[in-house]
Length: 236
Ligand SMILES: [Zn+2]
Ligand SMILES: [Zn+2]
Ligand SMILES: [Zn+2]
Ligand SMILES: [Zn+2]
Image (cartoon, rainbow, N blue to C red):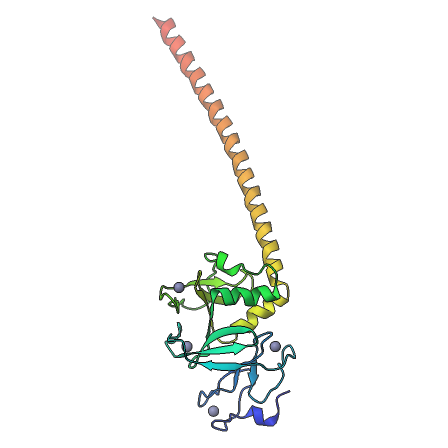
C-alpha cells in the first residue's frame, strides 16, 4: 500500500494517480521501472515491488549511448535492473532492449521463449492509427508484433536489433510469460496448423470431386457429339 506521501507528486504537490508513472499536472516522474523480476513501476518511496514482492533494484548507468527514442526522439538513458540491461527514454519512459538482452529476459522466465524474433509478420493491428517507429539501431521502420500472438501487448520489433516497449509493456509481457502465455500461444499455433491441414484436405477432396464431374460431363458431351455425327452420316 503506498503511503500518503507517495499519493502526492513530489515535484508539484498535486495529487498523484496511483498506477501512473508520471504526474498528470507537471509530467514529473512518480514511479520508475524498478522491479528486476517483473519490471513493474515502483514509486520512489517503495522498497518492494507491489506486484511480485521483489526488492527494488535499479541503477541509472547514464547516457553513454548516443541514441534517440524511437517513439518521441527523446534522450535514452542506460538503466540496469538486476541483470537486465535496457535503454529508457527520459521523456516518454518507453524502453529499448537489444535483441539478445530481450530474448534473455524472456528465456529467464520461460525456457523456449526466444520466439518473438521469429514471429515478426504475425502482428495484429492494434486499435487506433498505427505509427511505425524507426529502429533505435538501424533506423529502419520496425514491425508491430502482438507479443506471443495472444498477449494483446503490441511491441515494435526490428529483427536482430531489438524491441521497443511503451511504458508498462515490459511488465505486461513478463506477466504474460509467467502466466504460461507462450505455452498457450504454442498450443493455439498447433491448433491453427491442424485446422489449415484439414482445410487443405477438404479442398483437395473437393477438387478431385470437381475433376470427376468435369470428366463425366465431357464424356457425356462427346457421346452427344458422337450421336449427332452418326445421325449426320445416316442422313446422307
Ligand atoms: Zn507534479
Ligand atoms: Zn515485481
Ligand atoms: Zn521517448
Ligand atoms: Zn534495426
